[in-house]
View 1 (cartoon, rainbow, N blue to C red):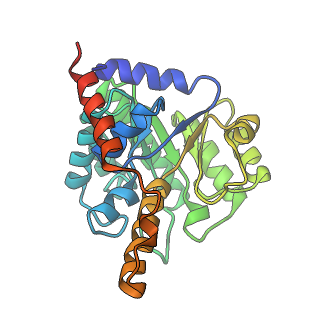
View 2: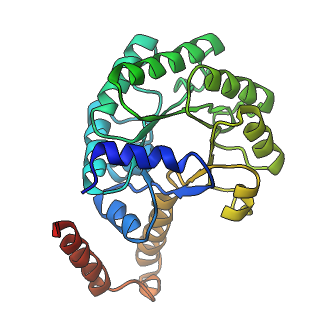
Amino acid sequence: MSTIIEKRRVFRQLHERGCFVIPNPWNVGTARYLQGLGFKALATTSSGFAHAMGYRDGALSRDTVLAHIREIVAATDLPVNADYEGGYAHEPAGLAESVRLCIETGVAGLSIEDSTGDPQNPLYDFDLALARVRAARAAIDRAGADVIFTARSEGFIRGRPDLAETVRRLKAFAEAGADCLYAPGINTREEVTAVVQAVAPKPVNFLMATAIHFSVNDLTGLGVRRISTGGTLSRVAWNAFVHSAREITEQGKFESFKGVMGNAELNGFFREDHARRKTP
């Protein structure tokens, strides 16, 4: 098993050049399968985990999320970035404490949003959002942890798709010490280019959800350093499950079972995976 220090070193190196995909598992099995496919790093997904637990995104407690992050970190040799939502606190001091607790799980990175969770006022005021970024940065520095800090501006997915304001926030977050910048929901070449250029030379994370017109090569060419999938992989699984269950209840048919991966294939993968993990 890789040590926490090794995972963090590898994760930082991944952000220095090129472009990599960081998929988002939602349990131990998906984390280990993604590692087996050769991905270089993983990230948790707040929505994927919440839905698997039977809750809406954002409804889980900090303690529940921390336990999940710790479980994913322990399950893989790869660096793990924590989708830490808004940090489970509004004020900077509370956010700093949350960041400290997240670092203790062994993550190689964590992301903090500027979303309030209030649909009527979805983004923190600029000054408070900036203070929260500074508090997270200071907490990481106090811990002496080589953890990649990603600052997110959520306007494009919270009903405030203002590119100029998003760029203003991300530039300020970069200057305040964020290592990586992230504006989930931007989907056009112009939006991506504007964000990348605004915070250069710091790396940018792109959320691949609906912008499937982009390939990895396309985004690499635009200067994106990291591509995450958020909760989309979990929704791919949910989509297949819901389609199949509805077919059974509504039509009394099982056509959706055609071509499904066999039990033996998954058993074989996890048998080999456990054997590898036990090998010194």
